[in-house]
Length: 483
Image (tube, rainbow, N blue to C red; front, side):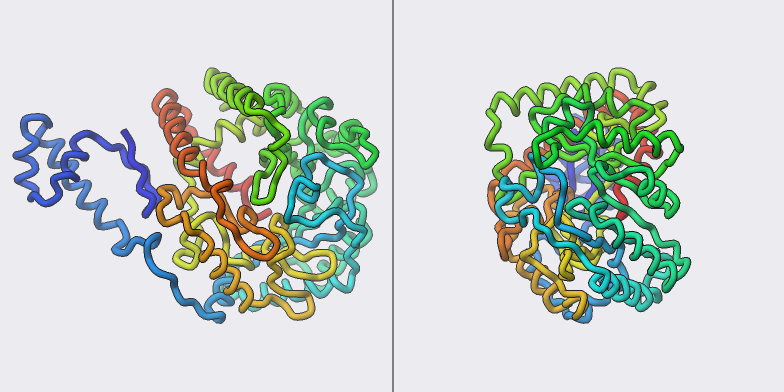
């Protein structure tokens, strides 16, 4: 047996002797050892008693999950953002897109997000955002001297406004010089022709391409406005980048209950396909109706397929160990136990400001929409702005959002996996309020417990997998970073 201590984020091998000792906690060490003598080795009983005493010393005196609301000032929020935030500035250079992907977050399946528009960011707006970001970095340098600027370009399809991207990078280099600025772009790949691709490579961009798999898998959901498939155009553009040996190009595949995971796995193992940065299921946040089109048997068939994929993956760990790049199954299956064992939301700095879920302190990242409003990130809807390019970050509003969010989390205090909950603002965002509904929360605890069970089954069955996890863990931190 294993126990999960949610207060400190720790898995504990849990023996029958430990259970007996905890149930007899009113007794002294000598009394407990004497009481357990018939059923347990005396040395084991003494060892477990001493271990439990140490465990009690590292647990917090007050359960942060059950504590009352904390009072934080606007100045404290500002200091936190300057010290721990500003990890990334993302410019939404356009809300226009030449695709109409069937699972798009801006489609009619999502009640609370915007639709596509013809808005394009201009340089005046971009310049204000860049100047303010670099000014905050300068001010925060005394708190975080090693932090480097990170600038992202997003859409819509950002390459529709390529001239602005060029102008922004030129401006940063001219005005702010060599600060080790990291650039990245998330693109559908259809406009990634030679001239643009070479410019992105010359400027050291991290290029993230939305590619879902082989042609039949990709074109099932990712299509142009006229319904035509997009796979061939993307592959034609990716080819020269791969042939050039460029290392900082990655794929962001998405899957749903109709996806063929084995076909995707075979495709992403090809040498001419970029490595997977992260694979995502289609979001099922508050207000999403995407999965209503499926039947229960679709979900059941997908889960059976996922189980077959697990068996396939763990059947040949030597093959997985010597892969040159991450595969789809490595992300979906191999890294899941590592995340369970070694990663915890407790590493976030916002406790006790944000004790529940994976929500950040707004300002950790900054997303700028096409008309100059600041938002928490690119994934939340537009109902929760945190400032403007003219007025800067509104730290009063950031504090209000934190309080509103915390006030909506009425189910968290009874949840036993708060440190592993991946929900955040976007999960509960409606038009201008947060709704912590059973739709999002109902399965979180049971699914996480199921994941824990599976993790330890594979860890016990394949200990060499865990022993070799340090390398994979470092890869997770690299691939999941703020770039």
